[in-house]
Every structure is written in C-alpha cells, then in structure tokens.
Image 1 (cartoon, rainbow, N blue to C red):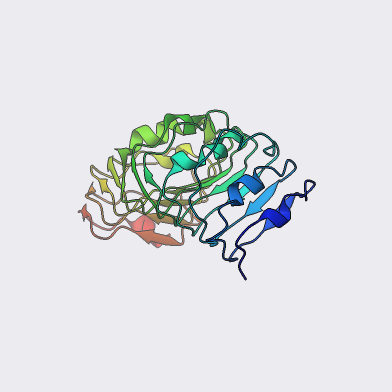
Image 2: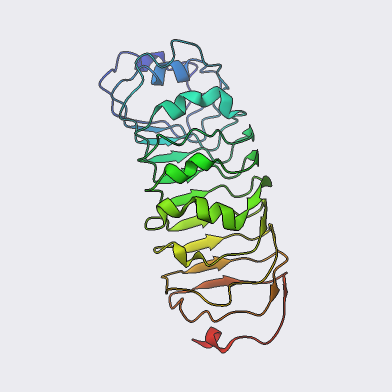
Amino acid sequence: MYASSLSMLSRLTSLKRLVLNSVGLSEATDWLQVVSNLPHLEHLDLRECYLPNVIRHSQLNANSSKSLAYLDLSYNYLESLSSWSWIFNHSSLISLFISNNQLNGSIPNRFREMHSLAHLDLSHNRLEGRLPGSLGSCCGLRSLDVSRNHHLQGDLSSIFLSLTCANESLTVISLHKNLFSGSLPDFTMFFRLNKLSVHSNRLNGSLPSSFKRPLSLSIFVVDNNQLTGPIPDLSVFRSLKVLQLQNNRLNGSVHPSLGE
C-alpha cells in the first residue's frame, strides 16, 4: 500500500488514532501539514513509511493536537531534528519513538516542558554531542534508549545524576554503542531498573564495589569497555538473567555471588 498524499484525511478533524505503519508515503510531502491539522489526534504511528523530509513553515502548528500522547516515526529517512521542532510543541507526549533514521547533530535541549514523557527512543541514528540537561525534567521517564548513535558522549556518572528526578520510574536505560566515558556508578539509585545496557563505550575505572539496595535487575550488559578491577558482589540482583562483562580489563577471582 502507498499514498502520494494524505489529503484524504484533512476533513477527519475528530480523528484520534492514526496508524499507517509500513504504508509507502515517500511522495506524500503533505504528511506533516495534514497530521498537524488533526486537532484531536492522540496516537500517530508512521513507522517505516519512508517519509520525505518536510521543511516546517509558520502555519504548521496552527491546529496541532494538544493531546498527542503517542508518536512513532521510526524506520524512516528523517535527517534532522531541526525539521521536527513541532514535536516539542506537544508537551502531552508520553511515548516518542524516532529510532532507525538518519538524524544527525545534537539532541535539542527542549524536553523541559515534556513532563508526561515516559518512553524516549532515539536509537540507531547519527546523533552526537551530549545528552540534553532538560531530560532531567522528565520525572516520569520509564525507558531511555539512545543506543547505536556511535557519537554521543559524556560522563556516565554525570548522566545518571542528571536523571535522578526519574529514579523511581526508570526501568530501562540503553546507552550502548556510543562514546560515553567515566566510571560506572552505583545504578541502584534507580529503584525500578530492570535493564542496563552500556556496552561498547569508553567506560573505565572499576565496577562499584557494593550496591546500596537490591534491584529486580534482569539484564546487565557492560562488555566492550575498559573497566578494571574485580567483579563485585552481585547477589543483590536475584532476578539477573543476562550478565555480559567480556572484553574489559577485569581481574581477580570470580565472585562466589555469581553462584547465587
């Protein structure tokens, strides 16, 4: 299925849910203007539609939905977040997925008003620079995935500290295949963390010698870094299913807690 225009939707002004994933929209240069004029839209899924890049114009946000909660633009050929500044006008967003595109440059520092944001996926792009400090305002954030950008950087301890506002909600942190550096701090500051993936970065120093509190952590992936020192006591992670520590510089003996 394909469409060269989305003008057929322009009069459906009461539309709340629009799912066109895998519909070919490479010629639909009006897609952004049309969806921006659906004032009651709550759920928009344009995953893998080969969307054309559209230049924003001054009238684009005139009738934009004030209740858009779900937006998926993954698996397209979007090149620049500067063309999608309209996204950040939707402070009602709960889930934002823009993975597997060709986004380049830095991540805009415009998350300060997005207090409802729970799921953010910017993985598999070409983003660079540091994570924006405004992410620290998303106190309900549950999953953060900026993996496989290859050029994002920053000190991991500082990043975790900036996210402490979401310490009671974050369950997934995926930062792998980037240029993040520094040591791995005690991540049990995130009470509900289930998955931590920071492999293939430039982490150094030793693993935390101990952890302050038990977690229901099931996936702990920290391989392909430059971590040194011994393997700590991991017995606080009773639900651990995946543990990857290979390709580091760890030494000493295997801690008996692995048997538990």
